[in-house]
Amino acid sequence: MNNWVRLHENDHVVIALQPFAKGEKLILEGGIALELADEVPKGHKVLTRAVRQGEHVLKFGYSIGVAKEDIEPGSWVHTHNMGTGLKGFLDYTYEQTTPEQVKGASPDAGRSFRGFVRENGEVGIRNEIWIINTVGCINKTCEIVARKAHALYEGRVDGVYHFAHPFGCSQLGDDLVHTQKLLASLVNHPNAAGVLVIGLGCENNQIDAFKRAIGEHSAERVKFLKSQEAEDEIEEALELVEELVGYAERFKREPVPVSKLKLGLKCGGSDGLSGITANPLVGAVSDRLIEAGGTAILTEVPEMFGAETILMSRAADEQVFGKIVHLINDFKQYFIKHDQEIYENPSPGNKAGGISTLEEKSLGCTQKGGHAIVRDVVPYGERITSSGLNLLEAPGNDLVSVTALSAGGAHIVLFTTGRGTPFGGPVPTVKIATNSELAGRKKNWIDFNAGQLLEDKSMETLTDELWEQLISLASGDIQTNNERNGFKEIAIFKDGVIL
Image 1 (cartoon, rainbow, N blue to C red):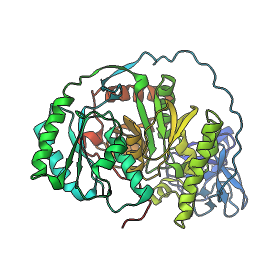
Image 2: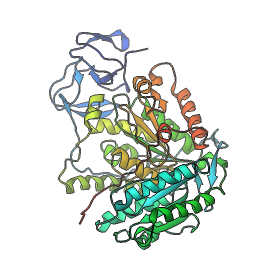
Image 3: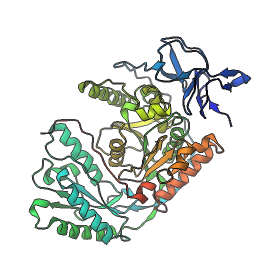
Image 4: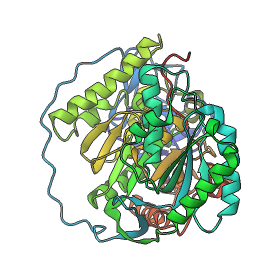
């Protein structure tokens, strides 16, 4: 196995696949020996061709930043000698994309998984009861109800879960609307066979107003309780959950076309291998699902900055192109409104893992979207309605973006990571390690090891393995680590005044 990799023939850098000491030599293409001028950690970059101050440094075949000084071959390239080349707002011009090539029938078009077909025709992969509180004041009440109900009805449903949050009161304008939309979209998620909405009674997010956000719904599937009007809210809530469990038991797993599946795409705690292993692997699986008629959802808008033109070039039409432009520029304006640097990224963990600039992170991040045409762009808190690849408005924050993907309709979230994290969203959250060291060390977090791409397995083989694991997961044959550990959380995007 080689101890470095170059991702594009035009790249100035190679990525170290092991740690190197100063003075060690790399044998490059054509047998050329390159002596290292610095110590280089695993996953970090080594310059192979001289770059002068102010010149762009290429990786993935694109610029990942600008040299802060003259950099000589053999140097470690990172934040100390390279900075972002991104500045302000950009002008984008729509160019007619090449029409999609007509492909033969997907070999997976006839595949199915065993899911739950709901009365409205939507499909779930879990038969759970969800408790949604309209306001944060009753988090503990809902937590007690969920814990008691989970124990009472174990084996009859796939679990009873509550998702704590601090909002729903003292919010104004669009900020309150965003909270209502997000929570309403969770209420409408088909992984929840039944939903109990618990309110307090005096909050801004009143149950009557929240019902309008939810829209048309079955009275058997969604129940409501105002705590201030109940003599014993916990007792009454448990009675309502019992009714919901009885309703949920009507649904049995049955064969469902794989085209009904929706995958959320997310990366968190990236390292220098994210754009080499896990993200391209997720992109391959995303493309495979879309070819079979399914849906993939890509978010983390600030981590599209610097790679947005790649997504724009794949817009289905000029209208979708315009939506992508607004998605990018509106998020830049959000940074400006709060007097923050637009390109203040990546995080300390990303930098420790070898990611130096936002454009480097973005070029790796967008690989999760594969090569499919972008069919639609969806606002934060709303649900996906188009099949194929969709872009969803949400920040890069792990909890906030996974919650938005879940609310958008994702049945499963594919979460790539080079650093590791235990958390999970409301839906099964598949942790995909970028490297084998992480996968071996955190087996209670990691569900799949993409680091095998650098060892003994091909992209085709790993794509097949991950694909089959997702079919089993959707069919309820296996669980993710976050499910087994009981880690199911939400976080709501906050952008407004609290009274």
